[in-house]
Length: 301
Ligand SMILES: O=C(CO)[C@H](O)[C@H](O)COP(=O)(O)O
Image 1: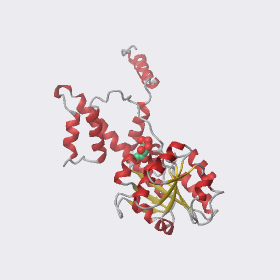
Image 2 (image 1 turned 180 degrees about the vertical axis):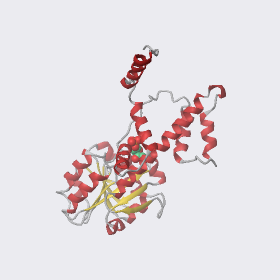
Image 3 (image 1 turned 60 degrees about the horizontal axis):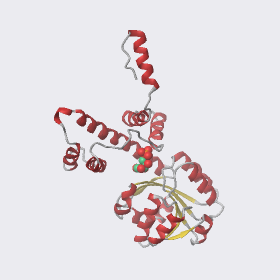
Image 4 (image 1 turned 120 degrees about the vertical axis):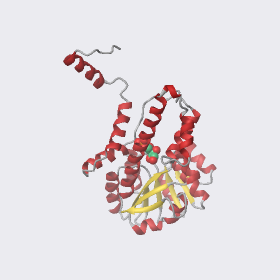
């Protein structure tokens, strides 16, 4: 097939490369000249503007956005709309909030442009191993894109699928990332407990390696945990500060809206927020209150 890839960062560039290797014609757009040069070196074509990108594709066109969620995705959709024609398909492969996806899809439907949301997982490993894709959209539109998904996926018939109507792909990816938070938190806490048992002087990398085969808790996240501990056993130089990109907090908000208890995912999100509070006013106030009501000692700074 022929596809325009918008956004040639780590994910977009690697996906373009995997598609080229699979025999597809890919034209990539990114404002950065070095990003365009890099995909040309890997066999794709490039365009320096969105107008040029659309002009290089035959109608009906397929365009895949791999750009940051939020305002940049909105800006991209708004810039593309006047350039696209009825029958074209626009795929959002980023981590968009599904509610934004529903809004954008409605706008596109007004111009008879198909909007397909593809929750994409696989990170920097996807180029070699393939991407897991949770797809929402019109069934016929998704079927039309089958050759693209078969090439990007880990296997022709594995690791991808249409999960429901437009919005459902991003909704599913949101929950996937919520689960990711909980799994990561459990591994992090477990290894921290092991590391604090000083009299046993446990080798955390060795334990991760043992668990990787046969153990009930083996997983790809554990494989990556083991790699990290092997490279840097004491995690030197890494600040205890954990970012988030939104999907964990959207999962928690959705769980509350649906009256679904999700204590593990919620606690792992809160723990990330807590990691950034390196001078906690709340903790100081707790200590002050204990001192007020019970005369309990305050640890001085
Ligand atoms: O989608 C992903 C993995 O599945 C991305 O790596 C995402 O950025 C991870 O979420 P967060 O940044 O909130 O940890």
